[in-house]
Amino acid sequence: MNYTMNRIMTLLMVFGVVLLSGFIGGKVHAAETLEVGESRSLGTNVEVPVTVRDAMYLSSGNVVITTPANQGVKLKRFRPTPAFEDKVFRTKWTVVNNKLDLNFVSISGKEERVADKKIIMGYLVYELSDKFEAGKSVDLSIVSANMKGRLNTDFLVAFMHGKIERKMPVGDVVGNNKPTAAAAIRILQHLNNPITDREAFLSADVNGDGVLTQEDAQWILDYVAGKRTTFLAIQSKELDNAVLKSEYSDQVSALNGRAPYTFKRVGSLPSGMSLDENTGKISGTPTRAGSYTFTIQVTDAVGDIEKQMFRIDVIDSNLLSVEKLLPINVKLNGTPELPAKVNVTYKDKTKGTESVTWQPVDTSKMGTFIAKGMIGDSGFTVSVEVNVVTANYLNSIKVAYVQFLNLHTIEVDVSADVYKVTVNSTYNMHFEGDKKFSLISSSFDANSTVVFRMYDKYGNLLETKQYILKPN
Figure 1 (cartoon, rainbow, N blue to C red):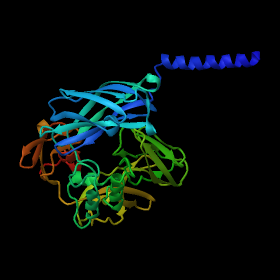
Figure 2 (figure 1 turned 180 degrees about the vertical axis):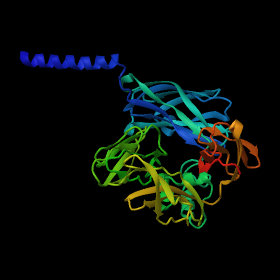
Figure 3 (figure 1 turned 30 degrees about the horizontal axis):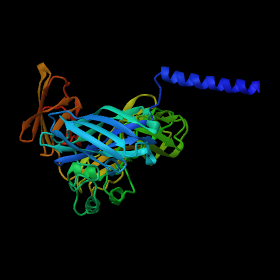
Figure 4 (figure 1 turned 90 degrees about the vertical axis):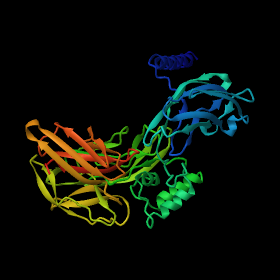
């Protein structure tokens, strides 16, 4: 009897120490989350959901959410869901100076069980003016949130702030400002009537593989029908080959979900390599040759999950590494200018160039494709993204150089779709009007190589171009 009592007392003491250490270390888990959504719109209005997550019971609460003023985004009202419109909870709210003050209480006076531990309280209804320009975003901040659950006790609430972006919603395509069956039909028509606008194309490419197919249309139809609740995707691309006993690095990315993302490997990576669960980076030094197939699972901040299968071939080669090639743009039905030679590093750390034999690239439809090439007889392959587009975004580059000042004057002529041009992702070129951008700089050496990047008004990358600064 005494032995049993001593064991019980010991367990209670250990449990108390664990609880106390959690309080002291500030590691008490706030299981319940108040989420303000992230929404996109190109129209004159947008609705943003306000959701309580991970709460088993809910009885009452107060929420205050603010939006910056003078950004062209005006909070008009709060639209409660049926549960918060006198069906389960009674709701009162006021909007003053872009601030929502929301109060709710259960009609029964007791706690209500939350199905699936998730409930949408309602929607913030915003009016968008022309001042809220394309590509801009505004943050929606939770100022305070006090909520009660079972037995009318307070619970800790973690905040997940929101955002509105002036972009086309994922899965929209046709301008309805939400995914619809019409958008799916438009995607199916894409081969005969191409979607040429970059923003619309990215909105239609819901699975993130760079090409519009029947799968994108099916994802949208499933979303409209309620079979899918998210467009979370893993950006599909082939991973580079790895070289035996040489350092390797490649990246897997997630999109269309709620950041931050967590990555998890399902299956075996090549021995000596690992996946960074926070960034999606695959790196390491492979120790065994072979072909490795595995799945990567991504989970976003609200718990949505998506999976994608990948493959890495580990080869034994006299090459240590090959230069990373920049994406290449090519017009529809055109021939991409793929490099005949690439810079390489050999296992003895010397550098050189090697010839590449490229596989054919299908440019009969728009999208992003991966061109594969074989480097000599090394067994090493090289890949490059080929973006098939309907127009040239960069028409010409002019360079003048004053040697004694080491001063370059650079001018580019672009298409009307281009709203921003950068050099080496560091210098923003100045818009001169008439589709021309310029830059005067002493930061570049004579005949140095720079990279131009062109963006549209929504911030989408249109084209990347490598260029040697020679006067012309």
